[in-house]
Image (tube, rainbow, N blue to C red):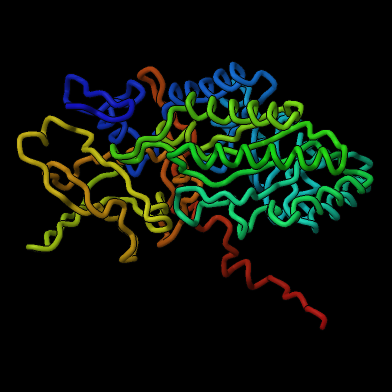
Length: 448
């Protein structure tokens, strides 16, 4: 049979990922289990850097760690020479703990707290991507207090609608992110930054959304941003040194998805920037791209164990697994669709497949991982692999219904190792203040 992604079938009839038998992984590490293919992660990171530097030498790639963040992945990105895109104090803390160089970190976020801005200044982050007037004013004041000058990019919404789910569109005029480009809105924050004493303007940032499967949106956004740079140059006579066009390239969640290759995506953007700059007589800025999902998404999968199976005659068959929306919120949040395969294929190929609904164990009717999935007959105890779960599954995981988060293992060339241990029941209560402690707690008085 034709297998999707980087899966293979071994002599035992079991699926292999990164050279590791998925049935054996489930037995060794238990389920639910996130599995990350280190070789594929590194390959994708290298493809981005190689193709961008080839077509646009003055450039860098920053990994958007909100897609998947552990010290393991941050060490890989550092080793592969990528920058890092963080959006919170927690992500910045993890990056620092992983030894990621602060000067290669871009600090995003539409509502950075005072503590987060101070933390970013102390960490000497390479760029603050400023998102609003409050941040510009506050960052200027905090930088002065620290005796520092801070390099900033101004986030611009180019008014481009991406062909994706509305919840992951970020570049339209009504986006919660950045300053709109229409009616001169993007010029006012630039005036504010240029008049500040402790902020050093470097350029602009733009990002139109994620899981983008067509090139028209990113190309149009690149054109509009270069046009905006030309306008800024003419009005302010200021050099725009850098242009960050974000990320957003989609991946294959089902066989029907057909995203452009990394190389096609990168070349389309870089060639558009070069052509637009030449047409408008704009000096080429340094170009940044910020991929996340397209580096780690297809490099991950999740293993589940099938529990009960409920057949409603003439209506639907439910196949229940030992995870669900706690380890993959995207179907409930975005109506995302996934592909699943039994980890042991040969035992399941003797009978024709049938459509079933793969459902989780949370006490929610909406805890459905795959609404309609064609699978061979399954029985309790079978292991099911859900593909392309490397992005936003672990990042969005929770302890709803008191369920511990799964373990994460990395696989490479037939070997596996734990990179995040499985949570225990004890972990769920480790931050609680217990009754014995409460008896000695002094209640604080709040003066009105």
